[in-house]
Length: 276
Image 1 (cartoon, rainbow, N blue to C red):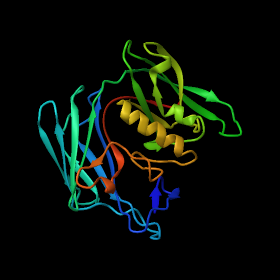
Image 2 (image 1 turned 180 degrees about the vertical axis):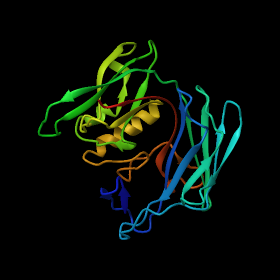
Image 3 (image 1 turned 30 degrees about the vertical axis):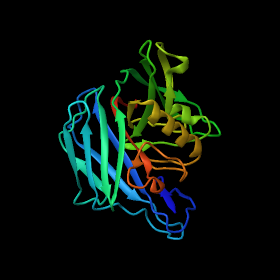
């Protein structure tokens, strides 16, 4: 079986012949700056037997909905006419503190996952700094940010960094700590000069955008395990490695045919700068 992580990187994972599992990539987003329109999407694919050297197939024809367990409102997702396996809805503006339940009906199986949307700290400052050439990176400009972690509560973070609208992710030894974090050792403190995407550099004129996501503990554990096991690979959101790394999605019909992937609900703080 092939899991695809970027345009050029693939990882071969041997599965028992004939084992085909649903892969769920779902994230509800609420942008603190109000830039979100309520558009949400969920991607469904399936694994393929290891002897089939082909692109990961889309899971088409599924029934997908999300239920707000606070308001009991149900949002139906419809499959895109142009992108098979992408299920979309408009007008779903999540509420911080509410739980959201994903329900999928696919090929006679019912899948379900739940996550709570937690508040995220603001990004107080995003700044550039000069980085000298090393054996790992070219000379260029790096990014650092400041944020204040809330006091007397446990918080988990996930960061995404974009360069000219391209997501920069590379899980190398040590770098996974620049992608996800727990506030276990800095609860309630002002975090200053936190370096982001330290495997990458920026040049003058580049547009940089950083997104800071609030995670539930389950989502943090999933991402941490994912990045620890994906060292040297450049994954996108929702890609799963290895085949035994299970997320929070359950098959209510047949537990032995468990799915892969994760469903989360995240408030997002974001800030961008143009490199000078």
